[in-house]
Length: 133
Image (cartoon, rainbow, N blue to C red; front, side, top):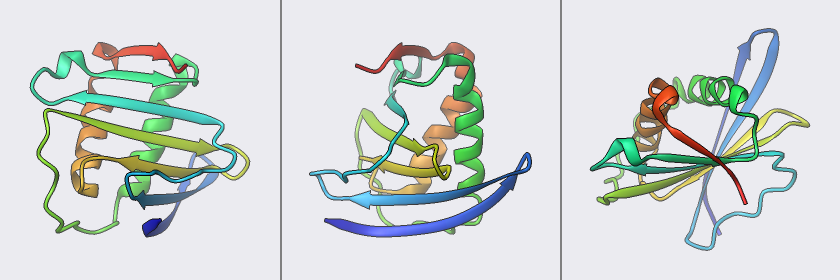
């Protein structure tokens, strides 16, 4: 069951990116053609234990996260109460056929999701990156 959809566009480095943020229930959302997946396990109490599992090249992660963050600008405030947890999971999927992002997280609040991804982006050189299995 899809509970919400936001669409935005961004002109970035001569490429138009269509950003689609999909919120889903606990069963998740089936995303066709997700070529690149970044699964972020963010440890709030010990940020140094944060891990990214991905099928992307390590050198491409920064550009992917930068594009995703740029798509979040102007989305507005999310007034929902965030889930209170010690560890959050954020999954960002990218369909390369049309540069569409699909995002699913257990934060309960899009602003919290964006803040956690921004933290990861800013500390990318300190984050453990492993291959998605």
